Length: 370
Image (cartoon, rainbow, N blue to C red; front, side, top):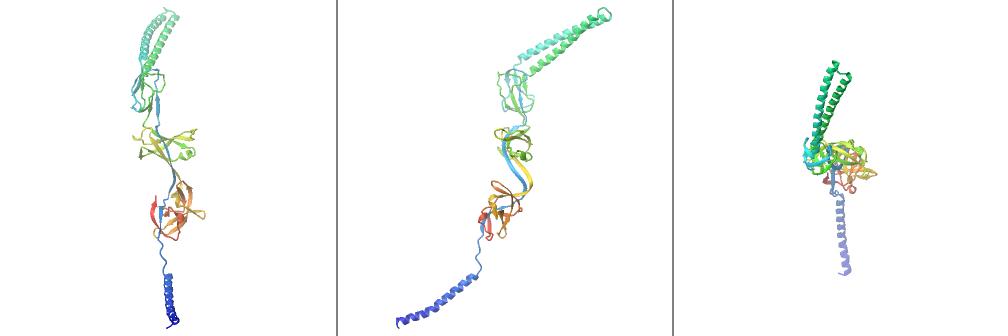
């Protein structure tokens, strides 16, 4: 057999085989096109639950615990301090002696006043006896009316001298008592700028006593917030004990702003103080201002713009499908968006990565934001 005839015979056998292969390929391709599409894996997302709550805003200010009542005590007379009976930080009670002056001069004044009173009483007795005798003699016409009037005037002057001596004696006794500085209220000594041997004047500061039954948190409020904060609810916490929360109310606001900081000093009275609150401790005043209506607070990353309208992705937890929902934003903060309409409590939204989602791709929740 020649080579030409062999080639012809091979081509004749190869053509049917190739046709069969092509037919098989077409059949397989058709089967693939008629089968169901491949399932798309759900996309993992971070979700957040919507919580609708009454509209409110919270702010905090840092301040210091101070007493509402603080008295500066001083001697009512001048003198030299011979004894100091308390120190800074000591607790005092009413009637307790805090310091004493040298009372030698006051005792001498008291003795002099007592002697003057005795002399005045003796003179009064003599003058009253003369007045009585001259009254009898004048009635019997043994002495003139002028003589009787002189004795009567002398008796009146003697009685007045006794009155003056009694007043001088009372003053001397008071001055002797003023040599002791007595506490008038229960409290704690916060200042004591004197030492034994020091000569002080009347009214000079000797001891400062702070009452512990009325404590306040003193803070500085910016002038932009002072009007809104007047009616806000307040609680006080301590840095040293964050677990304790004390109810408080605004008692006083300074009528004038500080010229350097442009803030107003506000004093919040602690309604039920206890022993854990010490003077000078750092305190935080938390204010809550109630608004009108209800709102939800969402992470900033959960809100996106769809044709200029703020929107979020709602998650159907049963199927994992996404639904685009327009919302009303009442305000934007540094970390959240305040939603005032368009959502209901309990709904789940996508909290992050909202710009990469497609409504046709299902999702699965892998984490829930607080």
